[in-house]
Length: 130
Image (cartoon, rainbow, N blue to C red; front, side):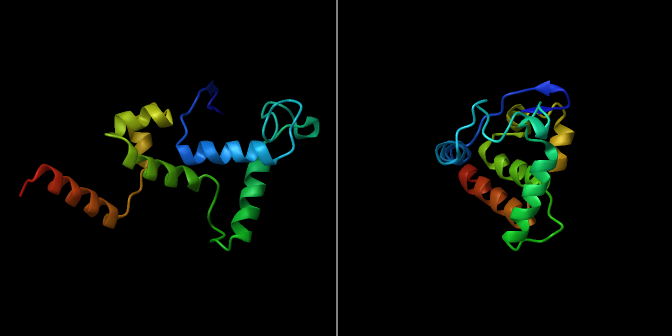
């Protein structure tokens, strides 16, 4: 993944890994080895640009009947919020999501109050306090 000029590897949960594996097995093979296209090449030369991601995301959102105000970037909020359940703390999660600043990670972590209460109650039971 390349963002802000720095290349990085990001670990995937099993479901994401299985989904990508399934896409690789069902989509036609590309000679350049990319699943969708080389992000460093112009679209006319077989690349896959951010415009393609945004366009196809909007089309999929519309087909699914989801709110039209949703954006591809909203997935980052959903992903960071759900990944929080798999990590011990925000520092461990920042390593996974490659956030350099925990404050930026907190911008994307948006749990509902219902989920926060459930997490606290679970920890209370585990720790047998109060």
